[in-house]
Image (cartoon, rainbow, N blue to C red; front, side, top):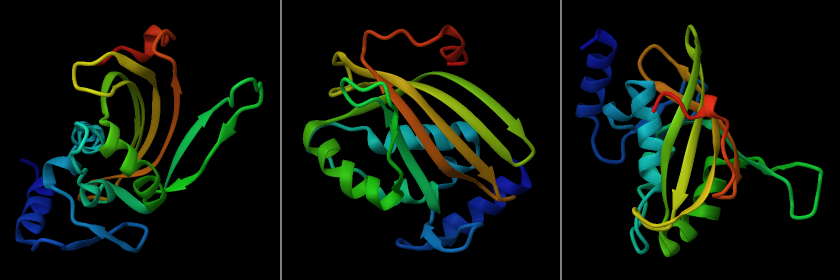
Length: 182
């Protein structure tokens, strides 16, 4: 293991339940599990994992919050029915938790990555993460789309700065270049 991963591991293992971590932008969030934030693969897997689960299963929203800088935005985009003008909503992490959380738990939701294009420059990474969503783990695909995820490395761990996404119907084909890498 690298010194960076060992340092994060030592801090996380020593942290009591309910511990807080200071984000690189200031502010605090719940302390993340080391495996969730030590690598880009880890944080992307943690993101999909925490929102996914069967109907009736509570999601671990503190784990979700631990992935993001406090100022992060979650930005769903699309075209309202019958419109040719696009729309974007800018949600805080808390807006997403309170707005989407009850529905995810009530109806069940599983989202998995089906492709990835990743670009990196020093401590910033941009990931185009293609996904498909289902109501049950092995149910029919209800949506496909792309999550555009911006991440930053603070010298100790990865943080999600923003996620912008565009969901499309299950019959829409995503370009092949966005389906490689998985």
